[in-house]
Length: 122
Image 1 (cartoon, rainbow, N blue to C red):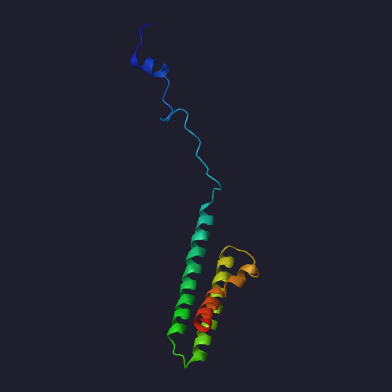
Image 2 (image 1 turned 90 degrees about the vertical axis):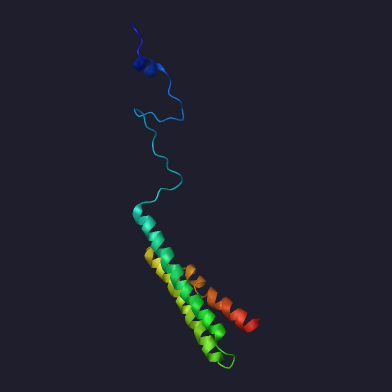
């Protein structure tokens, strides 16, 4: 039987780094595979929380620029920043459909408390 290029190619072993069209590799799943809705939920919560925390940071910065004679305004701005920080944590929990009352809520006023420490103790 004469050998043709097709029979030689069929007998020859395909190198490992090349894909075999008749036998494709299964798709690799690294770690946890997330659905599209889970990815959308994480993207939305990260965007919402960071945007709201930037607003809280702006309130803290505004408190630094208020004069020393307006201590009441400084305290008021820091208090509003603390409430906004708590609101950001609550929004993140609500997007992920988690219970709103958890220990994560305690992290909300941390930026305002840090700003108050720098402003009044230093």
